[in-house]
Structure formats: structure tokens, C-alpha cells
Image (tube, rainbow, N blue to C red):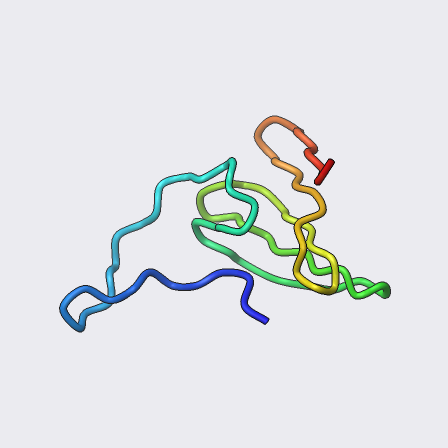
Length: 78
């Protein structure tokens, strides 16, 4: 399963530019720092370098919710 991917190389070189914050994108991150799972198989990805958030996906990779540290915002899939 792939939850995100590195930007495509340009002219055979990998980009080293930092990504801008992308707060509204459920399946993108701008600097993931860690990943973990719970007993039900849900996946938690901390997107800490730029977005200051934790995104929760189900065991199939479907977006469930996000918690943003800077505003305490919780958004769910509904």
C-alpha cells in the first residue's frame, strides 16, 4: 500500500525543495515524521515537519480523520 509518494525527479535528480503546507489534501503530506497502527489496523501518519497534524486512515488506506496541532481542528471523512 502506498499512502503518499516522493515528488518525481527532474532531469534524473531528486528535488530537495521543501513542500508548502497542503492542509486540505487528505492523501498528501509535506514532511511525514512517523507512522503507527492500532489494534484495529487503523494507520496514523504524523505530518510534522510542515503541517503539524496527524492523519488517520483505515486498514485499507481510506481517509478517516485529521487532527491539526496549530488549531486543534478535527475533521472526519463525513
